[in-house]
Length: 330
Ligand SMILES: Cc1cc2nc3c(=O)[nH]c(=O)nc-3n(C[C@H](O)[C@H](O)[C@H](O)COP(=O)(O)O)c2cc1C
Image 1 (cartoon, rainbow, N blue to C red):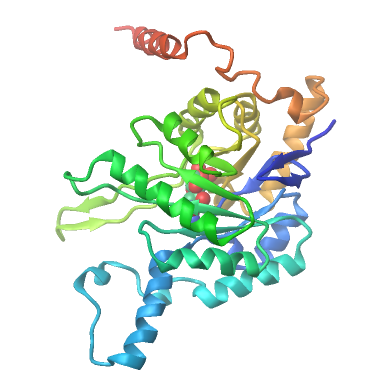
Image 2: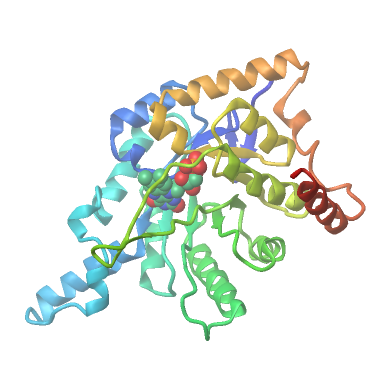
C-alpha cells in the first residue's frame, strides 16, 4: 500500500503534514513530528509586520532616535510577543533542515506590496524547500473593490515568485466572490499549489470594557466541509496542487479530502490539542483504512469524489442547497 505522494514538486512519504503553527518554534516538537511520520514541516509564519518593524527600528535607531511610530502600529503585538524575530526565524529553518530528513516549507505572511517580500529569498537561502504565502487581509475599506484586493494578492505572489526559485504555494481565503476563478489566476501566475483555506478569526466584543476581544477557538471537523467543496470543484482545473487545511481532525477527514482531490492535508488544531505525535495516529489510521478497503495507493483514491466529471456543478450545488433545507422537519 503506497502512501507516497507529491506536493509542490516535493516527494513526500505520505499526504499528512502539520500546518503553520507555533509548534515548530520548539525543536523538540519538530523532532516529535518527524518521528511520528509527518510528511513535511511547515514553518510558523514570518509576518510582514515583524520585518517592517525591525527595519523601522533599525532606521529610527540610526537616523532619528526621537521619531515615534505611528498610532496604527500600537494595535500590533510588540516585537517581543513573537517567539522568533526575523533573524531567529531564518536560523530556525536552517536548524530544522539540519536535523530533519523531511522537506521544510517556509511561511511568509503579509498584505502589502513592499520590501518584506524580499525575505522570501532569505527563507530560501536558509534552506526551505518550498514556501507558503499567506495574504491574510480583511477588506475593511468599503470603497476598495474586490478586483483591487485580488490584484494586490497577485502582485504579492509575483513579487515573491520573482525573488525565489523554490515552489510557492498560496494559502487562500474562502471569501473571494469566485474562489475557483481566483485560484486559477494564481495557478496561471505559477503558484505551485493552493491551500484551502486560511481560517479567519473574528474577534468577540467585551461589553464591559467596550473593547474588541481576540478569541482563539480551535477548529472541528465541521469546518472541513467548506474545504471539501472547493477541493472537489477545483480538482482537475489547476496545474498546481491542492492542499486541504482547516478542520482536518480524523482519518475520515483525510480520506474525504483526498477523495475530493487534495494532494495533501495540513493539520493544526488537532495537533495543538493532542500533541505533535498525534500525527502518527492519523497516518497509521489512513494506512489501515486504505488496506481494509483494498486501495493500492493514495493516488488511486484521489479525486474519486471530485466534481471533475460532474456535468453541471452549479446545478449540483443548488440542488444540494434545496435538499439540505428539506432536512429540517417541523
Ligand atoms: C495558534 C495558531 C497559530 C497559527 N499560526 C499561523 C501562521 O503563523 N501562519 C499561517 O499561515 N497560519 C497559521 N495558523 C493557521 C493554521 O496554519 C491553519 O490554517 C488553521 O489553524 C486551520 O487548520 P486547523 O483547522 O487544523 O486548525 C495558526 C493557527 C493557530 C491555531
